Figure (cartoon, rainbow, N blue to C red):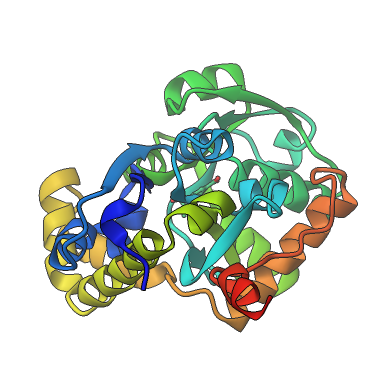
Length: 293
Ligand SMILES: C=C(O[C@@H]1C=C(C(=O)O)C=C[C@H]1O)C(=O)O
């Protein structure tokens, strides 16, 4: 039995958007119940967490599925957790001030917070419409983006807020729907990854973090109404909106989600967006391998 008290501190990265609430809302409460004291939570937008996990300043995080694909050999995937969609996501949105056919020949501003969605846009534009507009990275500010481009890609809370008041004449396209119409598949935007050395150096802490995430998800999903009330209080928008949002997103990572993500990785590899074919490894496989050595 590993002595957890002797293990080093583990930092968990939490996406700073409402989309992750059904996994993280009860996390700290669940963790405290297990008596863990050596865990810290750091919040950030996906691009920040992607970088922090790659640099090892955090150990476990919800990151962009694209960022996992770039460094799959350094990480292990935590099972049964993701932020996915099947046909609609509601918070990865393309705002267009010109018809799509014109925007395809023009320029689209993309949020600096994203890795998965900006590459999803490249894949869908190229694959489905045969051409990709010029993409420019900008801070997520719809008005400023549309001043410089024909369209804007936003994710997370900024996408949600902008969807409530996109402005006159702005068409709003849902990126998961565009992907579903083209491929017939669902899309996984975020996965949960642990750095391999963290899983090796602090196995008991990582196990408890995983169990607390799984339990937090069970509790939150058993009370979507309570979660929606809390989100409406924090962000506005009405409880009905949030209930629909939390019921639209998928939080598991089963065969259906894996199939969609695997096709996304294939497309990204074929387009040269990923250097290697992605071969995912699931935690705690390496622990099992060590036992068998
Ligand atoms: C569903 C969403 O998926 C997100 C999109 C990500 C990306 O584009 O890299 C990363 C994590 C998720 O937060 C969202 O942003 O609302």
